[in-house]
Picture (tube, rainbow, N blue to C red):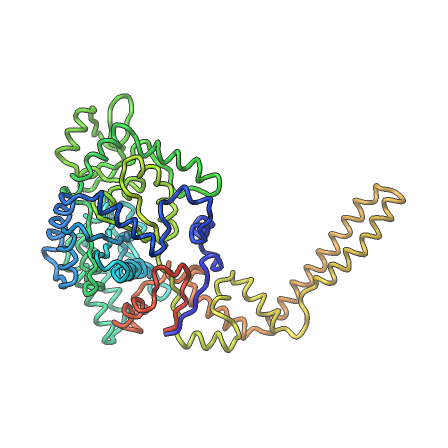
Amino acid sequence: MQTEYISFEKTGYFSSLITDYLNKDPKLNPFYNRYPDLDAFQDQIKDKTKSFSNDNRSVLVKALKDQYANLEVSEETINNIEALKVSNTLTVTTGHQLNLFTGPLYFLYKIVSTINLSKVLQDKYPENQFVPVYWMATEDHDFDEINFFNFEGKKIQWSKDSKGAVGELNTTGLDEVFRIVSKAFGDSFVAQDLKKLFESAYLKHDNLADATRYLANALFKDLGLVIIDANDQDLKRLFIPYLQEELLERTSYQKVMETNAGLEKHYGLQVNPREINLFYLLEGLRERIVYNNAVYKVLNTDIIWSEEALLKELEQHPERFSPNVIMRPLYQEVILPNLCYIGGGGELAYWLQLKGFFEHVKIPYPILLLRNSVLIQTKKQKEKLEKLNVTTEALFQDQEELINKKVEELSEIDIDFSPQKEYLKEQFKDLYKLAEQTDKSFIGAVKAQEVKQINGLKNLEKRLLRAQKRKLSDEVERLTKLQNALFPNKGLQERNTNFSEFYLVYGDTLIPNLLDTLDPLSGEFLILTL
């Protein structure tokens, strides 16, 4: 393996909010509690240990054991679940949607970041125990976001009518996807392993939550990963006081709007709160709860309650109340003894809107860590880039800009007409002076002529550049193919490509290589040559 690093800012793929957070810009200080430096975890451990009750631990462990009841579990995971009973055990958490066959590569990077940070904390604070947790987003309802994955430039999609929470979706129709997958993966020994993994996950489990749990456990079980489905009656019961306050007081709306007023002075907002940030959940149904004309109503249904009836429903069926993007982070921190949330740029952006809300409800606000980001290239691809005298870092540029710079570099003639443009501007200064001395009405005519001639030089530049591209077409084509291979659809590889493409090449060494290489606290984008 060979490693190189590039700053997140230089990639051009991350927002100013995220790059400012990584650079510890002081204007973001009011929006988070502690920056993810290793020493900062000492106080975070104290705060969370003090606030998280043994009763909550007991409920959590029982729920996890029930969820793992029908799954082959490693000793490491069993020990980690048992350890959650003890007050000195804390978690590091990441969350992700139930994407088909993990979806894009960053599913792996999130979990590897979480496992690796748990190890780093274990070394730094040996008197505590740290458990990596993957939070399955089983209550999401946007099926179109998760019903496919990309393989070798093609979209492999699960077509199905979907209503309600995606975790409860039955897996009918995935047998057809499996036939497509089987043909696409080929017949190598590694392909057989991948096909068996897909089949065992999706054709031998009845719903998407169970299938995803099986898949994530199969990939990471020997590393002690604990997978949680928070769509659970007992876990929701722990959240009743906060659900009640949300329904009656609209607290999250008020506090997030106050935070937004400060944040939007510098940045765009990732999410906007509703007056009530909860859905109502039944089989095949997940719709917003609204308050109007002194009654509570579930949108697009006939379900209505008085306040008294609503509170009774909440007490009897807390599992029917589903937090949206604003309330979900609080739910996570209420039911887990969590220190740190690891997420992508978009996730951290909405977490940074929530600190005031957390302070109001007196739940410790977690440390926020940007997940590892990786570009994987083969040794052969790196060698091709070296022959072209192009760095991998240069590939993060816009393709047109990349090609133009390369053509200018290789060209035997100077394509840059900047000196000629400057010379022309100097000549027109004398013409402006002449126009002012004779008839100022000519100034406009002089300006028009200057613009016309400058544009003429620009057009000549473009024509010359096109001619040189044709002359250097071999180099242009090779560079274009390399960038397209490493940046599919002109985007980051990790946001497009499925892990299966790399698993077919590297087999079961892929995840160990990532575990050995990814430093969760590096704060840089990794370029990994395998």
